[in-house]
Image (tube, rainbow, N blue to C red; front, side, top):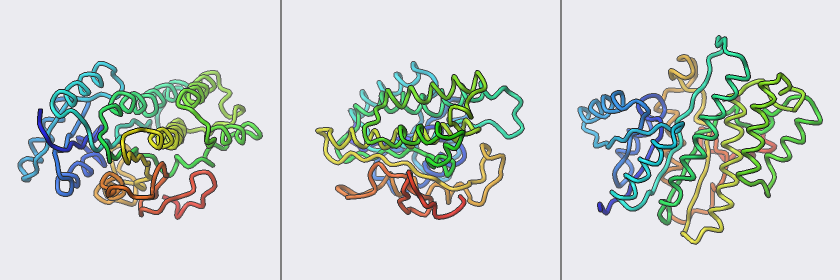
Length: 289
């Protein structure tokens, strides 16, 4: 078993994920795992990084596949016995021009972005070593007031999502309820916004708060999870629209991944791309992105 610190970035063969991997290679003292659904594309990216002089390891990981997640967990457990940094970057987004029914978009987006992220966390969290850091990529559209469907239903949803007593199971139920209402056409009346991607990012941000409360009670010392808005980044996912480069988008997640031992904050926070902690419930937001 190798005695080395380990960092993992999901969905990292391109875009912000790849930029995060590059930064960690130069700043993280340990080995860095680039992961991707497509093994061939992942290995091609690793080969390109190695030509740049970067040392990267690869493992196939599809956060929408339980067997893939389990295989990766086994690999980490048997090779290293633990994990020190997990960056939850993998996600999908439908284009504005998408013609799929909203119910289908909602089902697929929530399944991958929320439940896939949750599945990775549930599988890999037992491997986290003391002082481990977890970062989940959210978005400016993951701001709680974005839940702005019909009132008073939207207010009720915001109250539930921001509750200090919210559990993973209750949050999962809320995400499933959104999918159900998206399928039957009543999502606005139920209080939800008309963006499946936005709901998924609200979901993972709420999940971050739930997870940090659990970490605070964990016998392992100094476990911290935060989520961040990397900004509007020019990537394939954004159809090359945005105001920041992938390298700029990586700055905040890498900062959170490398938080020093025993910091007081941020913990369980919604962090803006400029590293400001934002009040996720009330705001204000530092800017439009």
